Image (cartoon, rainbow over all chains, first blue to last red; front, side, top):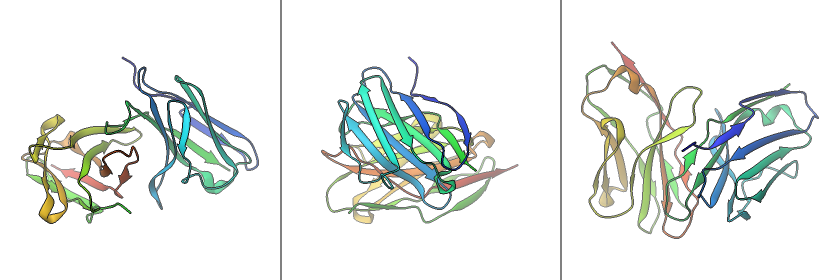
Length: 113
Length: 113
């Protein structure tokens, strides 16, 4: 069974551009999480979905960030406009739901110049 | 609010030596606890988890961890480390009925010959 799939693996963009990160969770998992990892702040939860519905977006830094999950097999995290301080590794994770472990994707390394 | 402390930012161990990585959590209810490992450029991989029952849990790659309620700790151990164990290790805590996990800041493990 394939794990969590993220694309692209690396993204380099210029300040002000729109960035879209993509995630395909493990089939059968009904919860999906977006995290951001930086040296300064460690691993932060941005938002998570359960059955395609956003449950908690309190970690989303500001209105420039948005996330969607149109169906059980796909989610996007969009940054518009991007800024250099958004440079980080963004992870997607999925789980079978409450009280189950999360499975992480390989991450997308975002660099905003 | 729940929190996780990993007091050691960086640990260096000789190959073949024993290892203990510390993790302390702060939360009133019974937690459920995880240890994840992250190799460079990779996502997080689950090593082991504790939900209930036996307080000594076995994981993959020869790792084990012991839940000590009285000390609010969940330390990770391995009797003999291998060079391939060099990575970053994260402790995470959640609680019953909530999907959110709080991650520690990580401990970077270096193995010397």
